[in-house]
Amino acid sequence: MPTGGVAGITLSTQYTFLTTPPNNFAGVQIVNPSYRPRAQFLFEQPLLQNFGEEINQITTAVPTSSLVPGGLRASGGTRTEGILISRIRFDQQRAEFERSINFMLFNVESAYWNLYGSYFTLYSREQGLRQALVSWQVNRTRFEAGQIPIQDLEQTRAQYELFRAQRFTALGNVLESERQLRSLMGMPIEDGFRLVPSDAPTLAPVKPDWASSIQEAMARRPELILARHDLKFRQLDLIGQKNFLKPDLRFFATYDVNGLGTRLDGSETDPDGRLGNALGSLTNNVFNSWTMGFRMDVAIGNRDAYAAVRTARLNLSRSYWQLRSQEQKVISQVGSQWRALEQYYGEIEAQRAQRLANAKQLEARFNLFKAGSARGTIDVLLEAQRNLADALANEYTAIVNYNNSIAAFEAAKGTSMDYNTVRISEGAVPVAVSVRAVEQQRQRTEASLILHERPDPAVYTAAVAPVCLTDAPPPSLMTVPLMQTTPGEPTPAAPAPGTPMPATPIPLPPSNLPQGR
Image (tube, rainbow, N blue to C red; front, top):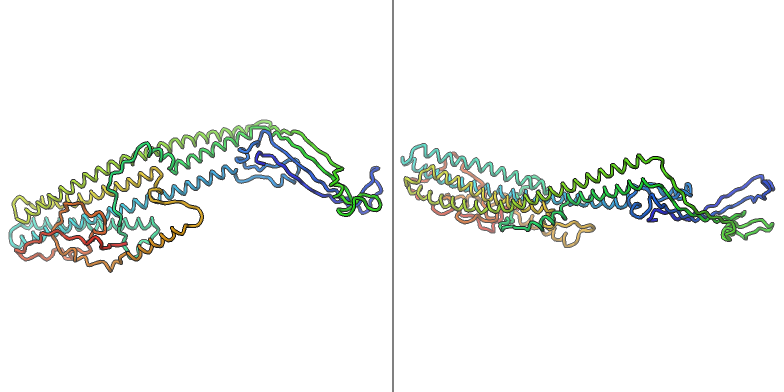
C-alpha cells in the first residue's frame, strides 16, 4: 500500500495421509487422509516508522508483513533506491546531458569564429606582403638607376621577407584552427576540402538587461539545476534517516477460514458419514478465527541511527553551501561576459577607426614615395605598411572576440541551446528534421569547391599595387582571396626603368565565387 501497509489474501492446503492410522488419537477421531485448506485475510499497517506515502517513496525497503513467514515477506525485500530518488537521478542525468551539449555548442561556435579570425589574419598579412612587394620593386628599379643606396633596397626586402614569414605563420594558424573545428564536429582531419566560414559575424551592439539575464541564468544554468537536484536528494535522505529513529509500531488484523475433509471434490460427506469435500467445508465458514492487535519493536540505543542523521545533516549543509557558491560563480560569470560585450564592441569601433586612419596615411605616403619626394622616406612608408596590416588583423580580432563573448554570454546564462536552436526530444526523430538534415548535407557536398578547381590565384595577384582599404573589408570570407603562391626567387623581376607603376588597387574576387565548403 502507498502508506507502507500490507493487505493480502493467502490460500493454502495441507495434505496428510497415515499409512497405519489408529482409530483415535488422544480421544479424537482422526480423518485420514485429510485435506486442510486455509484462507487467510491479512492487513498490517505501520503507524510510526515507515508510515506515510513520502517515506515509502524515499526508503529502499519494500513494505512487507511479519505475520506470514515465508509468505508475503518473500514478496518484499529491498530495492536500489526510492522512486523519488530515482526521479531525481533521472533529472540529474538529463541536466548533465544538457550541460555537455551547452559546453559542446560553445566550443564549436568559439572554434568557428577563431577560424574566421585566422582567415582575416592571413588576409591582412597577404595585403602587407603585396604592398611590401610593390615597395621592393620600386626601390629595385631606383637602385639599378643609381637613385638610392643599397641599404634602402635591403630595407624594403627585409620588410617583404617579414610579411612573407608572417603569412606562413598565419596560414599555419588557419590550418590549426580548422583542425580544431573538425575535431569538435567529429569530421576527419583532412578530406581534401577547406572549411571556410560563410556566416557574417554579429556587428550590431548587444545590450541585454542585467536583471533578466541573472534570472535567466538562475533558472537555466545546468550546473545550478544539478546542484538543486543534489540538495533535494540530501533533503530526502535526511527524512529517510530520521525515519529510523522512530519505534516500529504496527497495527495488524487477520481473519482465517479453515476447512477439513478427505477429498477436494464431491459431496461434503461420504456414504460412511465422514467428512468429504474439504473445499465445501471451507466455503461454509464453519472453522474460522480472527486476530487483531498492536505490535511495537523498540531498539535499545540508537547510536547508529543518530550517527546517520548527523551525517545526513552535514551532507545537506554542504550541498546547500555548494549551491550558494555555484550561484555566486554563475553571477560572476554572467557579469564578466556582460562587461566583455561592451568592451569588445568598443574595441571594434576603435580598431576600425585606427585601420581607416592607417589606410589613408599609407595611401598618402605611398603617393609621395612614388613621386620621389624627400618627405616620403622609406622608413615611414614601411612603418605605415606594418601599421595597416596590424590594424586590419586587430580589427577582426576584436570582431572575433565580440562574437565569442556573445556565445560565452549565452553559455553563462545556460541558453546556448536556445541561441543555436537546439532541442532535446525523446522518441523518433521528426520527419521534417531528417529532411532538413539531408538537404543541408546535399548543399555542403554539392556547393563545395574542390581544391584543384579553385581559380588560378595569378588572376588576382597580377596587379601589384597596394590596397588602401578606406572602407570596411568584406563581411564575408566568400570575397577574401587566398594568396596561393609567392615569388620563388628571393629577387623578383623588376620592371624596366621608367615604367609607370599601376595605381589601381588589387581587385578582389567577385562575391559569388565559392572559396570552400
